[in-house]
Length: 275
Image 1 (cartoon, rainbow, N blue to C red):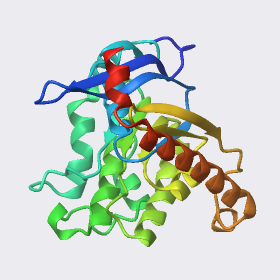
Image 2: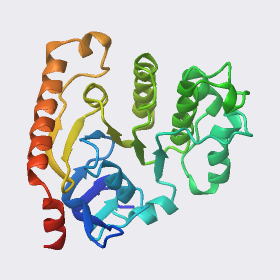
Image 3: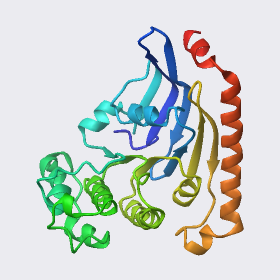
Image 4: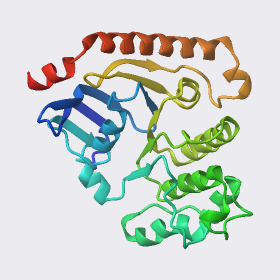
């Protein structure tokens, strides 16, 4: 690992998929993104703009057709091998036959030899996440919000250098979502991990992020990056402030432009993919 390298560096990344009719759909075209260590960056855009594809490239689950992706100066696959990557998917994906505590401690036990930093007290993390009373229960005995909370604690347990989060709160009600946002920020500030967070929520992106990346589809590409210069912690009062709403409006305007431009582009994705 290069200590001076960007946490995430994406240069000219392209990714296309062949369809059953042999046509090609361009998921990503010429994507460039640099994320410094310790930053919280959200990716937002309409469905089909390649947000999750971009996350999979950084996670080493797919490789770009062209361009490069590195994590702290190494390939994503090398970063995954040294347990430098954490992932929180949309679903909690807890093992149903293990208690909450055993679910969140299992990765730290399996991967202990890969982690040279002191591991956190998982019971304490569960208590701080509001799960102290249910840590000995099975996932089926928990609400959806509690299960997702446990998944976040589990992911941060290994102190990953880079955390990838794919709409982890999308299925939750607004109140639960706001509670988990607060707890996520507490864990992030403690661990100093770099976070790449996919969301459809503009307010969520502004509340959580140092930077918001706006993407457009057909083909999937970055159309704007917006630095969120708001103090932390992002309190309820700040979220209700004119400054916060100004960022929401700016992002919404970029999304509206990107979506409108993409609708006019028609089959442009195929033309770019074949160029």
